[in-house]
Length: 72
Image (cartoon, rainbow, N blue to C red; front, side):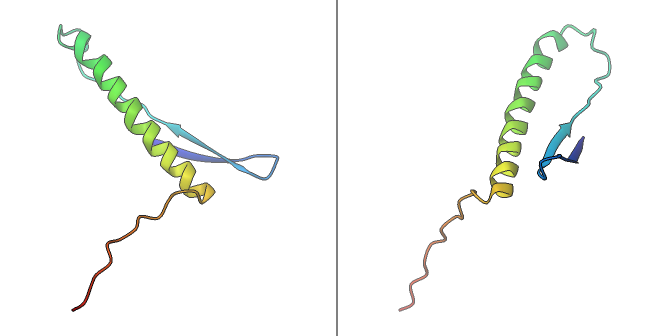
């Protein structure tokens, strides 16, 4: 898993995420059904991760409001 930052001619930076995985024996009958689900799950996780990185880089990530403590 690699995160690569590439400078752009416009002065910005491009984030590239590279992910590689190798499973053992993929000729097993169960892999026909489980690997697509794992791929979709990975897609969901990585998309959320990259959207959060984008929001942090652009300064648009909302700051969570903490519950105010009331002293008596």
